[in-house]
Length: 61
Image (cartoon, rainbow, N blue to C red; front, top):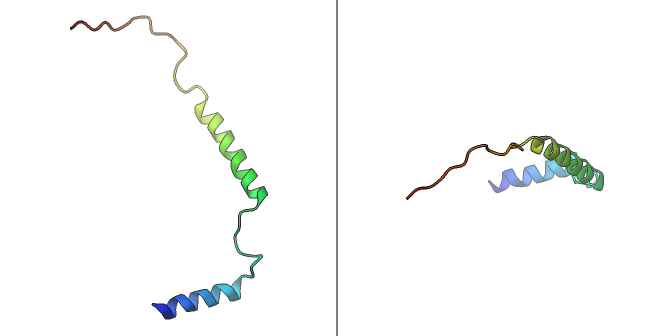
């Protein structure tokens, strides 16, 4: 198991330099926030009803 982990670490180190590793930059965060905001607006639009019920429920105990 230890040999496998060392092999994987060495392979990752050889394949990718420090700059090429996946890191979230400011542009990535802004894109993610913008997409989330657009999705929230679309998802919450027309959620529920604006009509008031015409009858009411009376609780008689």
